[in-house]
Image (cartoon, rainbow, N blue to C red; front, side, top):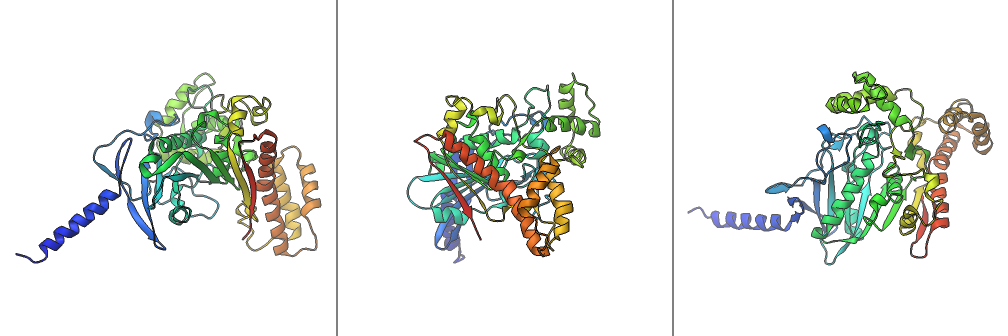
Length: 434
């Protein structure tokens, strides 16, 4: 008899015990994760958990539907693919795998006694790039003794295209995906030891404007108690689109060959759904080339998730939206030099003349078409110094982008909260410096 057989049997038993400890029964089936140990603290992690059906075929441009059940044990030890996207211009790593079948989330669970508070991360990326794969929350969960959930959502034209006159294709699908992820948290986080009544949503950049948008829709009511917008706000002009997304749908259709008249939007929708994901993405890139604006796809006043414009939402302090917004705690803020992400092409500095003749006029055209001269005059008085060197001038441009892109919008958000806040909620503003 081989002497090692009893030891092998014991090893198999031990592995089985460890694996079973990492199995969790959720509403759609059983999943198996893995564990990491960091500075003596163990975190169980579950990656790539489906929270919605794949948004493909007839579900492209449709609201997410809850995930189907599976049999057996689903191995959740690797991130799911990122949602369809083009290479990002920000210098961040691009995902290795992209797919339309991308509506998955990840859960980080510290192995300690007690029921845990929950934080749900909404990634940034201008509503057109990024993914949950960018973020390892092992240390965050271990240090804070909290459960962290990170969520994928549809991006760019897959998540925010609007097709006027086509049923259920009115944009905001990426935000609906986020809501579906939060519903999953309510239904399942208890199985991981989390408290569904103590959910905080937080995000950065477009993730920050997303969590602010979720605070402004009653469709997300009851799904979270606090929100933390970091370096972004619902009051950013890039957080909303108007007629642009609907116009782009026609442009994309023309490029692909999905020609439709004003009364044939359902035919356009059908044709775009039949187009391959890669072809549709390529056509959307062509359609937005040369189109003015910082972002081409973002939130939309659609008559459903957002029945009225941002400026109209707070006219009635007793409206359901106002009461929902007032009931939430908020911690918002930004980092010193936040605008640097929008200035990655000036690593070698810029001259005062370049700031005066190129960068300030270009920004004025983007943020205030038709009022460029007034904006240029204000920026020149505040930031221009003809005697500055290249690197000081570059820093002044970063200050412009930080003040315009982050501080002004976040300050506006907190001023509005100050007007509408109630005694049961708390609000804080932070500035991080490195």
